[in-house]
Length: 234
Image 1 (cartoon, rainbow, N blue to C red):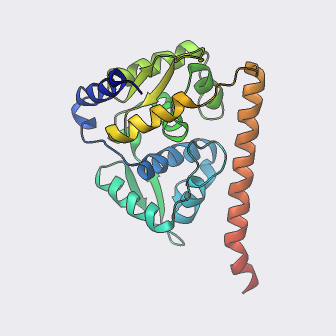
Image 2 (image 1 turned 135 degrees about the vertical axis):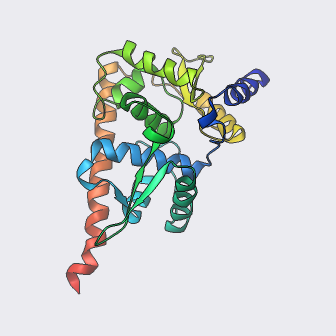
Image 3 (image 1 turned 180 degrees about the horizontal axis):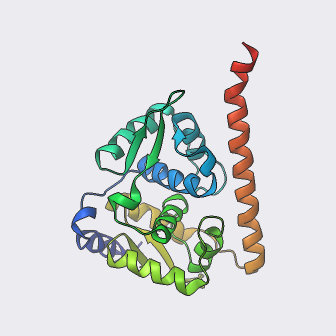
């Protein structure tokens, strides 16, 4: 990564609006918020999430970059830290306590911006076309221009930045700015080195993302069944 890129990240963070200046989230907190946003949009019947369900979502092998292996203790501790910043809330239940995100209220975002932020939190820097395709189950963007418009609003708020295309890449990318500068630098460096999907057509990329989403849903169902199994055998 160049020195100019580092300075760009740091300057974007310091120019953010007052309610975002303290938002330097670690990797676990970033993953948690992304998962809560995703599950609210794709699985509203099971949202808010229990701690177990959230850990499963955080550790999914698909639609996650990077893949993580978090424990309940790590997720629980980070949830409390996010709650202190007004970004998550504990919902008391008769059978189990559950967690929901408060990104829309804490950062004053409209639904389209919440979805784009969630995708950037879960999968790192992405192109406009990738964001348009991956958001199709979560928000009805009519075209790429609508995505760009909302990304520009996030940039104006200091919540995202444009990453110019690098050598070997065909498109610019966008990344979130909710992490600490060091983590953001590492994220950007890793994504710039990642190979681009040159051979796949937009339709093929869309199909890949659809299959990843289906696999993720199956993983979540399997995890729920495994958790329920001890209750059925007692």
